[in-house]
Length: 348
Image (cartoon, rainbow, N blue to C red):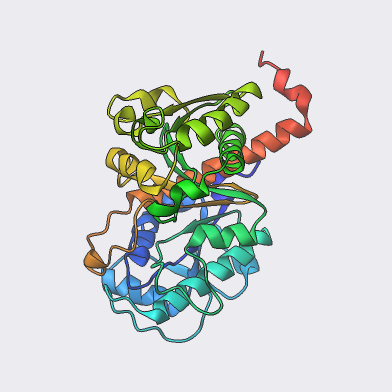
């Protein structure tokens, strides 16, 4: 297994007019972090030099044009572009969207080629990234196309893990998206991720209802009775510890979430509002179900504080450490599956 300091963490720069550059350099300016992993920022030396000088960070870095030039123990900056960039903090700019995607594409290519081990993405603006070449709502949809597997947005903070049946879908369309096939696919993705990535052998999963009070026996909607309950029962019949549907309004307030390894919400805000209320600033967005590890902080570009030096880097730091943990867990599980006799050995 690789030592942590040899795990190469690729970092896409995100929207340069937001707080991405600040939280990246704030995380890496502590030299102790460079003993734990090797960072590669996909941007340009000129851009990172501007950010360093603007925020007065005491950092040095190694500029590279090929990933074979990575130096462990250094902040490596891969030149994803050469042109000079004019950064105007707090402004939405199509050019910043273009550079954010250029960074993401270069980092993803490196991830697929095993030139970096994991990918951590700084926040993007979902509007200014749109173009004729890039028509994805965000990171997850793009990575689903580029990497193998069935992706799922999985929010993680210590032992609190929240997955979604639907993510960037208008609320009025949620019920139409949720089918038996989707439920089966998403919950199996979560179940497999809990086993392979978090080393939980028999995961317990709670599922929240689609409608208020899970439909109140059809009074407030029939989807919970006609679609969700039968799908969950089929999973239980197949031996999975899946419980619900639970009424979403009281589930977190009653602290029932503490009894489960993961919670599955029907739609974006049903899951992310309680998650961010409980863990904002230290939560991580993990794209589960893919062949490679990708994480990101639990916040956006934060234009309102961009450039002011006020951004909190804790969520980004947690995203890096979770990516390394998951990478090592996958390596360990792969090793044990290749040597199954070792799982039964005990230390003497």
